[in-house]
Picture 1 (cartoon, rainbow, N blue to C red):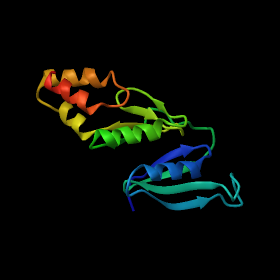
Picture 2: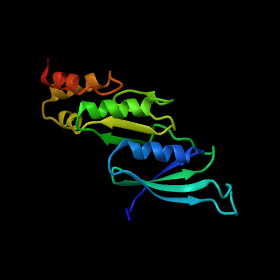
Picture 3: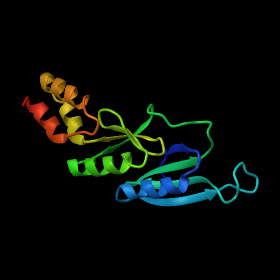
Picture 4: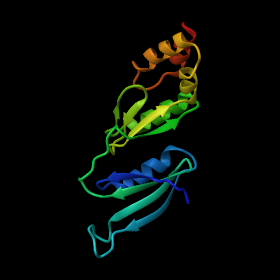
Length: 158
């Protein structure tokens, strides 16, 4: 079992979220669903906890109530190796009530914050070329969805 598991707080919509999240990436699946008991606080037909894997990483959805709300102070980052993967995930996650933010961040329709990023962006930002890092930083801070070609041009100073 994975030692540290991220729990995401939900107020309903657990089944819909499970279906959506496990459709995003390969090696994703529902692992276990636990329903409320007769004791409550939910009814026995409601999911209390749902464990799933997203690209092999384990998560738990908690069907709580309106007491907690997700916010951008905590986000999940998906590192993509191509613009096509960035585009696909961005489109899937911003539709049906999702919202774009800045610099590769978005909020999905369930209120969970994500970063759709790339290892290449991290490589550029870790460069010893301070001028290139500054250009890339200025470029990606003006983007909602990352544009890898534009970031490469900024890195090269074009």
